[in-house]
Image 1 (cartoon, rainbow, N blue to C red):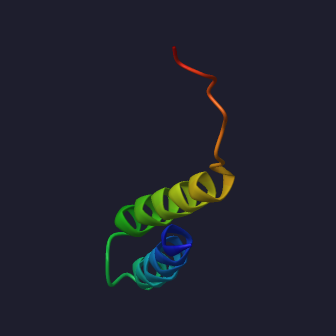
Image 2: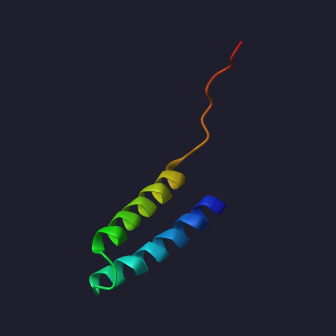
Length: 57
């Protein structure tokens, strides 16, 4: 649950940086890369599930 909360906070922060980039306060490439990475890792954490990998003897 903590990973998902951290991911959502990162998405919000990177979205704000992206909007600042659109307003020409920051480079747009920084905001867009951070936004993409934060969305990617948040979706990755959502789709992560525990799998049974078999019995190792």
